[in-house]
View (tube, each protein chain N blue to C red):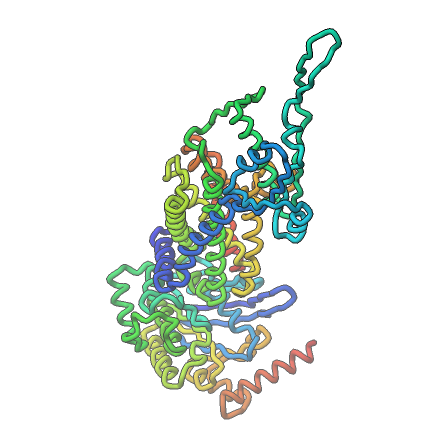
Length: 383
Length: 246
């Protein structure tokens, strides 16, 4: 095996991209587009959820609670027609109706009782509040929006109590394991997943299509009649896609920084290593899978098998601990699962190689296994 | 000395037997034509000779080595049926890639590429991306790739399919020149006028060599005036034998 031939194969990939602007755009623009779409779609919290308040309270408490609701999160309309408001929810025009009965304030206030005992002066007895109930009529077919509404009510009641100088008998004081990540947002924790997802999907896809093209056009046969070995061909591809993935990863991080101002705490060099290993794993998988496709149209049929497991099982959106016990082992067979964990550890927790070496070792192990599989697969096709 | 030596070579794909005891020998410096109907086993035989497939029976030697021996690869030029070029690279970039893979040094590579581009009359198209070339130009580029490493053995699988008569004549003039320089050439073709230009011709059918000799010898054996008639006679006779033995 010679480095010169490996470099020649890698160089061929870059020259191809220079002339094939469409693929170059796909490699650079598509991951950024995925990052922007995912970031905005999943990273933003619900806003302007339409609710109706029907306030019949004869006192001031209900009004104060309504004032304490977050008016950015909820778009609050008021009405005096409870039945009409509920009908609006039934039609799907509103998410919830919040109804305060006439005695709400009274029920929420301590009750005074004048005690009259013969022969004694009248005494005022203070009894605890009877307990006020606000009624929430809510559409739970959209759990995200219903959850937002339901979370708002105790929060508003808490704010009201705090404003009145009442203290809770139980308090929790937060301390942060990773101080620099104490203000981390959903987007911050999504970005590592999106990077690993984009690198995995696009690298696998492009290698798959490129290799099926090599097979169907006869260029792979032509390469294998030259002194180039199967190992040189595969490693040449890995070199090219590793460099491309590093560029993609850098671009994604730049966009995440500029658009979402994401938290990047740890060493970027370690993150780059994770990204490159993820790309090597992905392209080796692409080569292995390409053997099963006779045409490019057949290769396209493999796309769902690449996208869905990566999207749903690697921990981008669903924590691995939340997966059913029988499904979780499959997650650990996916390289992006390890890549996402490593990237989160580096970017958010600020960990370096001394902490993330196990994940890097696993990614390296996958790279060795899949690369060997790709080389053996190519050699076996000479049988 | 035999540059190619196949002895009772067999190739089985599942239940289908593509080669059924094929034996043939091509001598050093010879221009050998391999003809036969579609599906006769010509391309399979060639893929075994260039090391892309392994025989399931018999023995094969190319330039004194097993076809999959890495020693053979630097000595062999191969032009497949498809143009087998990178469509998004220019003509020069395609040639340069294969030159690098053959380990040709930069200066020699540049000199050789310029020489071959002149030979296949593509000097003016050197910087053109292959996908923008006509079919004939792509074939010429493919031939240039096969000739790049000055191979001792040139194996050409139907190199003139879809090529216009003028280009075919130019290809053959070049094959003749290479043969005079000592290159061994094995060529498969469906054109009988091309087979006539070969020193010896082997007719392959049902994975076996059914006739072999100079074009004149083949015509004489079945007492016909043209090689095409000889082809039909041998192919028909082989078919009858196959049916009898079945």
